[in-house]
Length: 315
Image (cartoon, rainbow, N blue to C red; front, side, top):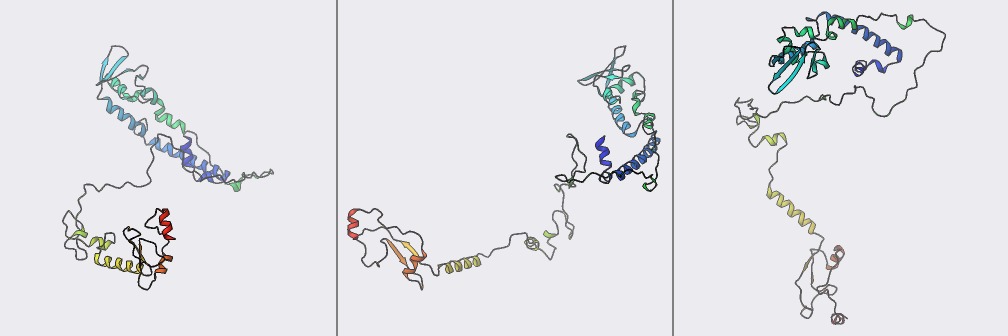
């Protein structure tokens, strides 16, 4: 109840105290008049919301069967479900009648069996007389603040404003079991929908795939929209890759490894300063001395095992 009232004064509660109280007074004064006029439009002795719930119970009560014991006990049955109704105490074993005050479907079935009217067993709190009693007192109008009597006391100042952490909450606190309303509008599914061409009027395709469309063809829609895959010319890509590899090769020497050979069979014509088992191929315009500076990798010997005899031969 307090959350519903809090949501109705969202604009007023952010104003000063006197202005807020005055706006709340005006809203309550107008609400009393609206509720009185609303009660006068009722077709029955109870409101439309109660009538909607009561009619649902009456509709369900037609499907139940009654077994009377000749006294106050009435047994109501439908399939495997079975309840006991006591019309004098206005009770039902399902306890819905006691909680809401509206006769349940079992009670309505028992009342009809007793040749009674279910409206007479409705709780008196739902009657129009009880409804008007809640709004019988009206708020009296008052003059504006310019007509108020001035007193000699110091004026009442509002408390010092302090900014609280976080974003201020304006919506009411919802219950845990209350369903949440989605902010976005749900769109209808396109499954099972048959598309129709706007050019030829034939079903099964749209204007982008239409053969009569001169602007686009079967292979054209992706190119028009800019979202499809474009055709790739492999000859051009191969030419580009070869030019890139040729430009990278410029200024760099290529190092190729030869098969492992014995030291005795090595050619004595190997240039000095090179390691055995390695052949240096010079690029155009580059000497062998430049390649050592460009290659940062450590060059290993063909015979990594250094024996005493091999060490002596090297000396």
